[in-house]
Length: 266
Ligand code: BGC
Image 1: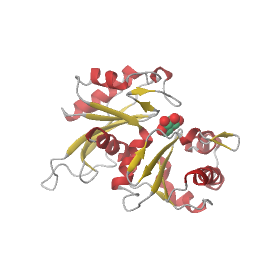
Image 2: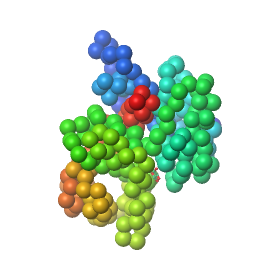
Image 3: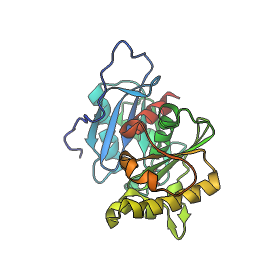
């Protein structure tokens, strides 16, 4: 069951005003601990009003999570299409992997699932890092950068999004690439840092190894670092030793919501 909804306030922005155009969308970002959503101005990439968050149910089974998504949508009385992010590979409307969420997601038809919980409306579902990548590339840290941009989210796992001049190559899943002898996310996620109580210096060494492996294969023009730990970017980005510039994500905890809304609008 979802717990009592707790409205988030940290990223609150003013409600709809005369400056808000009519080009609105709705996105929900399903995270390990919170399921957050909001109305998005698709022309500016800003939230219209406050974000709303409920705790992600545990276990995070498909039906329980879809119930939480419906609760977020109902809070806004939003009737239009809804974009949803998920922490796994989504192809042809089916979730294919579930590294850090309930394994029952594997093989789930996500359009059926969400439209069942959302009154049959139009739904788009996409990978969480892909959503953040779309949003950062259009409205955030990547907006003036052409060529290949790679966004990485550092959290429980490592999510990746690869954009080429604004076009997303979906489901790159680079967090599972073997770097040295281990999957990248098993050596350089922020969870690994926390679990081992590593200093930023120690962790930045692991992140650098991963970034070097990625840049040697993809040659991006820019890395964008996302996930909660990107808020402390000043503590670790200067310690990185890879060659490609790394900048923190700028949309912070709204990137997934904005990217989900962009995906359903597109
Ligand atoms: C998953 C990705 C996801 C990332 C961040 C990885 O374990 O495989 O699909 O984007 O975690 O949530």
